[in-house]
Length: 294
Image (cartoon, rainbow, N blue to C red):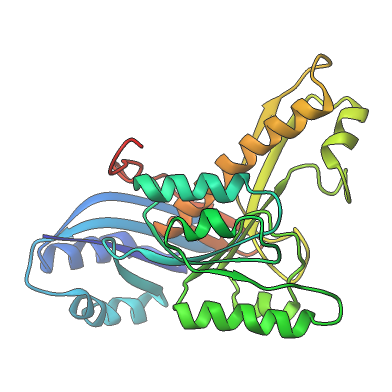
């Protein structure tokens, strides 16, 4: 029995859910999980369904048969085989906490992705990546070679057939062209102090201002720096008793968690871009289960 997911966006109107449910029944598909959202501000409808295909139709058959419904409601839709892992390229600079966290989650099956390459502008994490049998590419970036370096990055992404780029504390600004070319397929993580504390040592700046909450934000990358649609956020409380070094350590932990949750949502097709915002549906039962504990 094959497990699929159906994602749908369209203008809001009556009869959408009924039409989809009827199609599922007619094609011997059993819905195991369903989420929907009708946005009154944009007039858009969003839906994600997990289902088991108990009939003889394959993914292509279900996709083709759904065209009539899609045309009637003006839908953008896709069927996904949930057993197929998304191919991901991770990019990192000199802060390795997010990379190491992702490698661990990937290794135990908590993050069901296929890491096809790691790209860095430094050699710091070459050994740890190669020890995981993952291709490592060191692509140096300078003001003089930025366009050439980015062309090399895109060549790695295209050759690997990657569906998603994850910026796991990659400290280089991507060009507008790359952001447009990979729109909705690049996820970034940063501390939540922007724009209050920009530049170097944001945690030190936050410490000096006596903030009581620190956190992290994960979002899709756009041509506007750190302003893409937000996927996931979280915070941790701090007090006057913590040092600037404590802020860094606590911030590191929350960054890793937020980035992993954002990737988990994206690879399970739970995220829908809705203008400058996102609709993020809850995880389906069992989607957080790991293949092994360690």
